[in-house]
Length: 156
Image 1 (cartoon, rainbow, N blue to C red):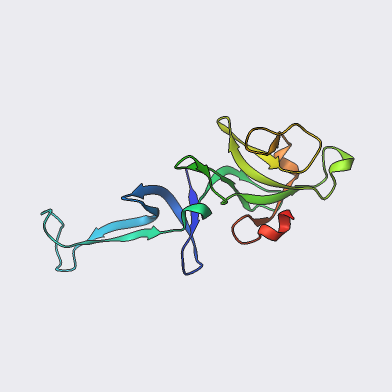
Image 2: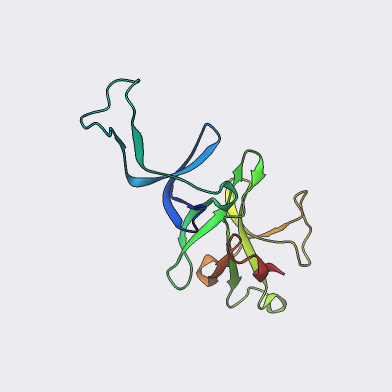
């Protein structure tokens, strides 16, 4: 699986996600342990640092749904971390929409019941306990227009 997260400096990092000692990290593909004194890291007491393990803002973490939108852009969904849903999901529109009355409706990609779905707090469908209504869709018609972390105003 591929994840992404935003650093405090405002850079998106892509790789694997892990949490170590309350630090949320994205592990880049080329990550490695580095001993500043040279040589291999073989003793626990040696000082070392991890090259390619990047700390990210936990609320920004999203997981690839392993599909691209209609323009070829990789789609990311919000996931639960520590029992709370992140705001790492992409904001999308369905173009053309399945139902004409849903034209220009914006959705968030969210993890739900072992899969990723379109989710919205607005609309005519029943909402779950988290305040969202979830929809299935034809992924061929999905277009990413932003993400919850950088573009929350798109959902207003």
